[in-house]
Length: 234
Image: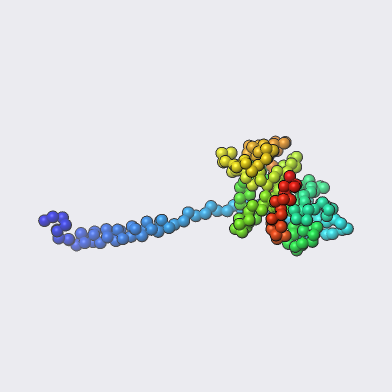
């Protein structure tokens, strides 16, 4: 009697039922595995810039305490761009401070903050940038590119040279990554190549003072004109 025609014993019945069950379950496992999504990389917790919102007006100036050392600083309102604001150095600790332009126009005052620079190693800047909650929020809103015009400032901690947002936001994680140099000027290309080695091109210092701030609504509203303002300031 051939195999296909032989009698099935009790053990054969159990064996065949088990095989049939596995045959049915196997496609189910494959389908389940095919639909499984790769878990997203866990977001790193990073330190954020220290800020102050305690600002007073005296004559035509704003007076505030440095978020780092509490030293009293004064800034003439005429030094602030109504949209882009301005940067100054603390008179005591020499940290970089960003003062929003809304303090000059008195727009959105309850939401405004003065930001102090945060020390970040050059080599760790990409990790700091891509894990920053402000960058995540802008990305979710589809307006990440506004950071080129407002919201990102980077200075050498030692010589205080300011690097453009275009250089900083395109700084790769490793020296092997490709960068689109066509968007950078010749000076920015030199800066990029030096920063990729981990140091400032002007004094060889390895620490940046970085500010990533929230973007006020009046900046977003004026974003169509900001590109022209940015070109004029370069």
